[in-house]
Image 1: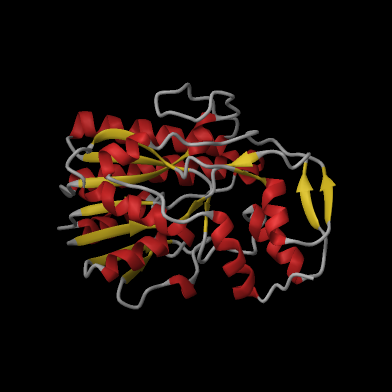
Image 2: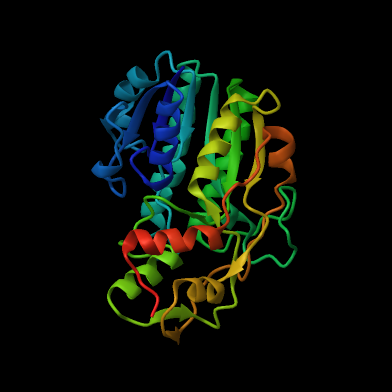
Length: 305
């Protein structure tokens, strides 16, 4: 098959590219390298340095999409706090970019688009575990934009006949997660602090919980969603372990002294109901964070005292 992966030089996208290459597919990657990295690039894939929100480049995008069997759409700016500070910049990338990809995919008769959605759409919910039909209550521009992408996918399926499915990721971690950037994952913050012999900074009381889901499981969910004959009409599916951990738990796993600092605007707890993923995709999580963190520390040469 010929597949296109937008954002394929990023953390999650590059893991999907690797899986597709491993399965002997022909892969084209579109990335503007704003957050994607050259070192994430798989030499067996073909890379195109393009911005999906720049409609002036649509002729180039159409050439890439021509004869493609499917598109994995991951390209986005993906930081909640940063979106609060820069909502217009995020809107152009996350909303206009998604509509542009869906439009070109439908024009080029691509069979299916698998869209990377976000569990942030649930907001600060107290109804747990989160089910796909639960109330949507985004509390950041990023969450709002990612939810609107789901709406766009379903609309394009209904109006233009292109198959779509949206996967709501829950707190992805794993290989190639970045230690740098303005708002890295909490375990990356802790890892960097351990490497610099600094105390772990915990926002608020540290009891906020996240349903941490390994990137290998996320990549597998994407592949299953592209090939399942039970989806394609704009379905929304949770991809999460259905097993959460607190920030304090992660701090204990990372080890070292801790300090508590001011909280930020964020959901108190996330927890996925992944029944739909099991039924429609045949997907099940395979990696637990408490098994992975010791390997991560060893990889970074972080030693327990």
